Structures are given as C-alpha cells and as structure tokens.
Length: 554
Ligand code: NOJ
Image 1 (tube, helix red, strand yellow):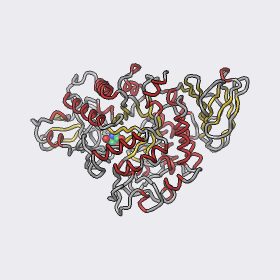
Image 2 (spheres, protein in one colour):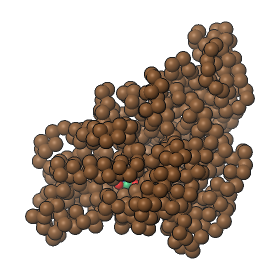
Image 3 (cartoon, protein in one colour):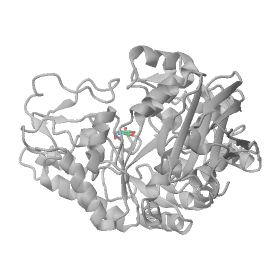
C-alpha cells in the first residue's frame, strides 16, 4: 500500500463522531441546539481527536421521527440555523482538519413533504409515481414494519384516492419509489447539492429498504444494487474522495453485496451491527467467544471499503441479530426492566448505566472499540460517559442534551425550556460533564483522547489483517492486527478476575520488544516467540511489536 493510498482513503483510519445539532449546543438561547453552537465546539472536537463529524438530519422537518422525517431535502431547519450557518460550521471544521458527512435519508419523505402532499392529491398528480401505490396490499407475507409498536403494516390506505402507499417505517414516512428514474435523478441532485456545500459524504439511512422495489411490478428494477452503484459512481465523479457510510443491518453475506461484492463500487463503509450485538452478548456473559466468532465470520471486503465499528448509536441498541435466548441474556444483564427495552429487540440505555458506572469496565469497552479492525464511530457524549434519561422513553432516551458543564441546562442552553430534558441522577451533568473532565487527567474524556490518538497512530487497525490469538481464558479477547511489518497485539478482559495470559506470537517476533501503547509496561517476547501478559479486572493492553528497525513511534 502506498502512502498516497493511505492518504486518499481517509475513511480507513478515520474517527467518526455522530452528533445531532439540535442537542449539541444552543447558541441563541432558545433551548434548541444550533449550527452556530456547533461551530463554537469544533475546537473541542478537534482537541478530542475525531476526524469526521456525522451530522444527523438538520433538514426541515415536522419532527415526528427526530428529523428523519424530512420536508425539504435541500433545506436547513430554521430552528437550527441557515445554509450560511451550516457552511460556516463546515468551513470551521475543515480549518481544524475535520471532515463533515451528513445523513442522506432518501428511503422516504415526511408525509408533509410537498412531493407527497401533491402525490396524494390525485392519482394523476405529477408526483404520484414518486411514491409506491397499490390498490390492495400485495398477497403473501409482507415485511414487518420497522417500528412494530406503532405500525402493524407497511401499507396504509390513503382515503382520498383509495390506494395504499408503502412505508417501511412510520405511516407518516411514505417510501419513495426508487424504480422511478426521476426519483433517482432527484436523489443525485440532492447528493450533488450537499457535496457542493463541502460535505465529504453521507451516512445513508436504511439502505436495504431504499433499494427494495416492494409493490412495484416485477422487473421494474432488474438489479436493485444498480441504484447504489450508480449513486457511488455519481459521488465519485463529483468528488473522488467522498464516502457512503451505509446503515445496513443484514447478515454478513448480504452486507458484502452492499459493498459491491469483491469488486466494491457500492457503499464505502457499513456499520457492523453484528459485531456490536455480539460484543454486548460477550459483555453479558463475561465470555469473549461471541465477539471473536462474529469478527471471524466477517467476510473479506475490498481494500478500499471499511467496517464502521460502534458501541452505541442514536437508535435503540438493537439486538435483533441475536437469538431469542441470547437477546434475553443481554436484557437480563443490562436492561431487565420493560421500560429499558423497546420493539422487543433493543435497549434504550447508554453503556455506562448498563455497566453500573464501573470505570474499569467502561474503559475496557472503549479500548476494545478502538482496537477492533475498522473505523470507530462515536455517538456524542460517549467520550464523557453520559447516561440516558429513561423518563423520556423510547429511542429519545439517549438523545438528551450534551453535558458541557454542571450548570443549569448542562451548559447546553440557558433557556428554561429545552428541546429535550437533560439526564438526571448519577449520570446527569452534575457528575458527568466536559468541563470537569477536561481538567482531570484521570477522566474518561482524557482516556478516550488517548485512545483516539493511539488509534490514529496505529494505521494497522484500519488497514491490517486481523487474527484472534489462542489463549486459555474464555473471558479474554486477544487479537493481533498486522499490516506492512507492523503488528499490534491487543488484549481485553471481559471479567472482573485478574488473569495472566500466555501468548504464542510465533517465530517472526522472537526476542522483539513489545511497546505498551497505553502505559509504561513494556515487555519482551522470549526466544520462542512467547510471553505472558497480566490483565487486571476488566483489564486491557495495547502492545506494539517493535521489530528491529521499526520506525513507528511508541
Ligand atoms: C434509521 C434511523 O437511524 C432512525 O433513527 C430512523 O427512525 C429510521 N431510519 C427512519 O428514517
């Protein structure tokens, strides 16, 4: 791999930070976060070390799905600011070396989008065929709606015109008809528009639903993946280095297809939902096996593609890819009360409360995140260990204001009425906030900064070959990532008992020093390629093999 490849393929070693402008920082004192507030916090984010911001939807919206119900794909919600404010925020990010990607939510619109208002006004409407209409829901088993607590069908009757329209999500989010070339052209224009304003790509919402031609005559879209291929080709023609980071929660074999198979050419990155879910199962069992198995089952992907690894996102912590009994184990361990669960498949909690605030265990999980092969994606507030507000309920429980200070409104806003309530209690702003942690060398924030810095200085984590290392302790996950003469060995202890882990790293590293990347306990491999590594309760180690002549720092 040449230096030019590693520089151009920036997403292979990026650290992505997801935030919602609405809950990040309120700069005009109206209780809602705004783009001017975001611009004020770019220095904080640059200092944290993240390299790419993912802005959740900031488009005009009736807010019935936290902004994922959009009424103008080219607009900026006036509550958050203007196009001018957005460009200022993007420009400031670029100035500090950060890229910005934005949500592309084109599976559906809001039912208040002028296209849908027009489409439902008559069967003859110019926009009628921009959505999916049927006289009767098709025979045979239909897909389950994604939000089964609120919808019982993906088809809803439109009284006025007597036909049913498709919506994989809420009924107020009618699906666009991707088989219609006019719709595909419009999507390209939307992509082109935001690229022209300086974004470096898109987090693409609900990709499998988006290309599903359900309800259209068979043959209307002979190869649904062609839609993604075209979008990617268009993106590349416009910018060369912009990305599509896809939300694709499907089995691994199908995920490979969304990368474009072994040839690539579709999504640049995809979230690894399977590893994430198995990580929670491993935590619940204090047994690393499910995590190791998931990672070993990951298909090989083209070199320019990448997995997005994460601990938490803005939705429910979905456990849908676990078996019923596995999911129950995670529920029992981390969300036993019904009010902590949603849709029968997920949890609405953040990590620190699930781990009862245990600092060793929380750090172990973030250490793990940054050593997993892939590109880590953080959700705002994770870096300080924010909790959730269960009283809000549903997925909104984790979408609370960022906790900047211990003051009223968490330093997020001085307004009386906030766009969302802050977290209360043990993980509330009095105990958990940026200001206090910035001044504390032992804080989680300081630790996450260290992890980010070490991750950035260890490109093998983004580029390398991954292997699980054999060792006798079920609670320990030991792995190695190798890339161009560089080898990083990482160990994570999923249990509270201390362990001593024997490792056999093989002949090629005989007598090499191992540099402790997170501390000062350097060690050496013996003349048979072996060593013993001590791990404390929920302990973790990152060890770089220092081969003679290795020039990598640390
Ligand atoms: C996936 C998003 O992550 C979620 O928040 C949203 O509700 C649905 N897509 C519908 O857009």
